[in-house]
Length: 196
Image (cartoon, rainbow, N blue to C red; front, side, top):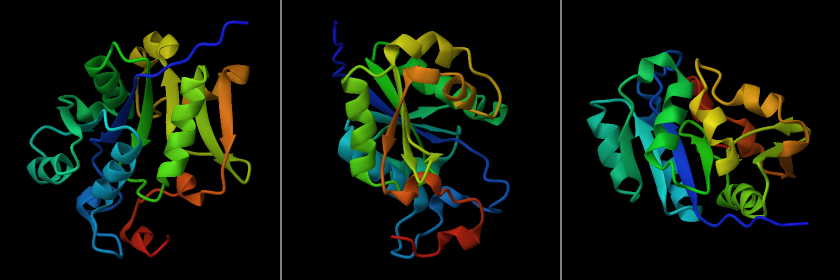
């Protein structure tokens, strides 16, 4: 049996959301340690995949400045209002020659770098898709090999890649972890409480 080893993976941080439920720019909101939500998520991703990019809204200057400090590449999504799928398409098309993409959400700052690495390792070992699980629940980030590029580019709406994962069957490699950060995003200011 031929084993495919993918080496060139790109991290794609989705940071172009509108944060309507939060009531303010949640990616700039501070965690208990004073670090902005989006900055923490970017640092965790770049620590594992230095070749990462963040998809942001046009004109989001303050977030762009904060994220740039991590070394992450910034890509604007001119159609950010169309939903998360559009940001995935923008990120994937920006690095269409990659061996795979690890899609992370900027409002999930508590995902441990070791968890991100485990998903990247699953892709490098040949998985078509990979996602972490904790307590039987699938979480983020999610990884896709280059074999899934056309499917990622055909996504639409605000469900992201969820339908691809739901229909994956045995093509989805689930990586068990004790990292509950894979399940915890920030929707309202009360979600900023100390966690780690």
